[in-house]
Length: 222
Image 1 (cartoon, rainbow, N blue to C red):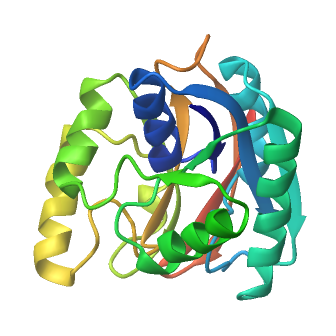
Image 2 (cartoon, rainbow, N blue to C red):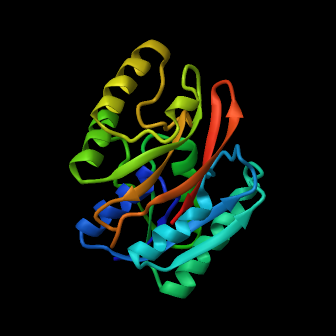
């Protein structure tokens, strides 16, 4: 099918797109929502503007849509963006990177039903540790760009998802109930390279803001 990808620039949406392509779907466009609310219920926000660079190296058209990020109302903006993708690229389905969030998955499902589109969730209910390991096996270079849970702190920003990261998140899950893939908003990520990219993205600089156990990093790319 021709599909549009709900794309945040993070590991889950990028890996879902990769799996969809492997299954034979045509990635017709990426759909990214730029929320003015850093604490959006639906949308990833750290370094969200850098999805433009990712779309360039993927050579896939990008639909961008702004939202104020108000709970539930932001869903109307998502619906407008998905409708634009349907009308502009004649897509049959939407790909999401949802892993375990019923809140997000159910709302995307409702929007797509209203627009007569199918929803494909390649990562839904997968084993979360295996998901992290699959990222490494499939040559995904992913860094952490936001954290929002105790005992995570500023030192986690910029860390790559590697085997050491996986082992530490296992311990954090046991001790503090941290979700291994950050599905509860514990952390956000950004993909610097993966098999969908024609070339690796490089970081020129970064700006870090936050305090205590809530930090975010805005990237500047070359």
